[in-house]
Amino acid sequence: MIQVVSLVGQASAAALPSILDVSGNLWLDVALKVVAIVALFLVAPLAIGYMEHKVMAHQQARFGPMDVGPHGTLQLVADGVKFMQKEGIVPRAADRWVFGMAPAVSLVAVLVVFLVIPFAPGLWAQDLDLGLFYVLAASSVGVLGVLMAGWASANKFSLIGGVRAAAQLIAYELPMVLAAAAVAVQAGTLSLAGIVEAQATSLIPGTSINVWYVFPQFIGFALFYVAALAELSRPPFDMPIADSELVFGFLTEYTGIRFGLFLLAEYAGMVAFSAILTVLYLGGWQILPGLAVPGCDGLFDCRWWGTLLAFGVTAGKIAALTFTMIWVRATYPRLREDQLQRLSWLALIPLSLLNIAVVAAAKVVL
Image (spheres, rainbow, N blue to C red):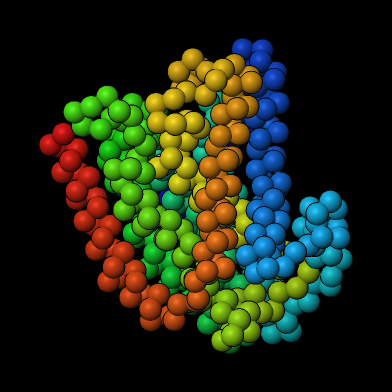
């Protein structure tokens, strides 16, 4: 845990000088970085929340939010204002300090992941040599906020929800790490920008055809995707909330802005894991395997409008992945706790071990 906090602190401290580096006097690059980071931290989770409202509404043959803004586009903003106006009730027997800190821990654990994700050429806060390890470590810290919320609420349903979240993290973190390790083995680096670069030159053996890692490692992609859903407690893995069993799980006693921060953390987590999947398996900002974005000479040398287009490509892939997460929510029923654990320990973990063994063998042979 100390190593995780240290890595998070180092990346956060290094981010500001990197963002404000204007040694080339390219103020437009600085503006693009600032705008992109602010948008991802604040706007992207709101956009994903609106997408979830509308997509699920249309899948269920209804309209969804329509009145607040054009076609309901400001509904999430209105919800945020509503949360800030609501009374923040703290149970009498609760640990007030831990109860209040839990939402912030969950939110910050997700947001610091964005510091090292390359969204476009040069459009990242810090390119760490251990970037892949950093994002996996930082994203796993979020469960501490859930545990804090469950324990501090002085509510048996909240406590059960927190314990379920911890058990779920333990079960699904291992296949996620093993799937990511297989990507690192094939790319030969733990740098996220380096993984994107490796996919630009990845070829089908014996041919000159470029492929992203999603093709040779489709099993790893599926493993990482399922594990991400479980870590986010998204349906069908929403056992920590399970409203038919636990009222609302670890969120039962939360109201007002604290409840809103937990929702924001969930949507930010969807964006973060979709971005990680995009970088690891979908070639980052490449339009097609081996095809550079217009305005770019190669993978990293881009003019300002090329960088903007590259960011749009990455954002499009992230939006597509979050759409599938919403689709899964509307399609599959919730698993029982025993089914959830069996899926990981008896299926995903053996499959992830087989996947990394095959990738390592192919790396040696080919």
